[in-house]
Amino acid sequence: MDRQLVTQGAEGRVYVGDWLNHSVIIKQRFSKKYRHVDLDTHITQERIKAEARALTRCRSLGIRTPAVYDVNFDKREIILENITNSITVRNYIYAAVERDLSMDNREILSLAEKIGKVLAKMHSNHIIHGDLTTSNMLLIQPYESSEVILIDFGLSSVEERAEDKAVDLYVLERAVLSTHPNTEAFVSCCISAYKKAGSNAAEDVVKRLDEVRTRGRKKLCFG
Image 1 (cartoon, rainbow, N blue to C red):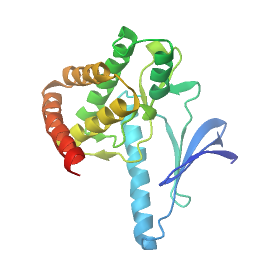
Image 2: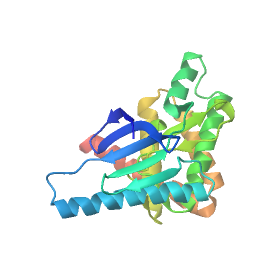
Image 3: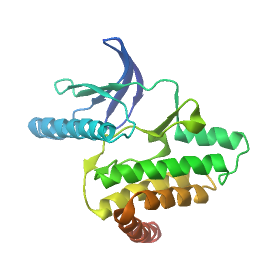
């Protein structure tokens, strides 16, 4: 299979290629030389399984994610749908700023509401993403009416605790505020939509989020 390297990180490489007449993304995990080979193989397989399960479970719930085409444990790879003609939410916000849209513009807040709703649905089914950032969300044209597509579930897990869901939201909140200036209204709208869409369980998560924020501030102050 022909492939072209897109990016390389601490955990592995990401390629784009063609597979059975499909444009695909191939995620290949590195072996960790500091771990015993059997342990490393086991951990890698479990991470690949967790990612494939989370993606498949999200799709079964009506949450848009890339389709899982194949898993190859021998090659440490997962082969996913390549969602073409898409843009990350991160780049969409950057483009909005270039158009002189303020972060409390209705178009931007509508996107925040969409994100909040899809995360509430994901969490209500106990799926933890693990790396929620605006780079791990896609939109397809026409962007203003696109559903939010979640990608990169490499750190995902299944957890029922409100604490884990609150940490998931906190990761997103910090990612948005540190990447995009003046996005307090955006974050507030996202959390509000999450709370409204997710019933009583979501309210518990939002309450726990305040505790997570407090711990985060203390860590920043005292190390």
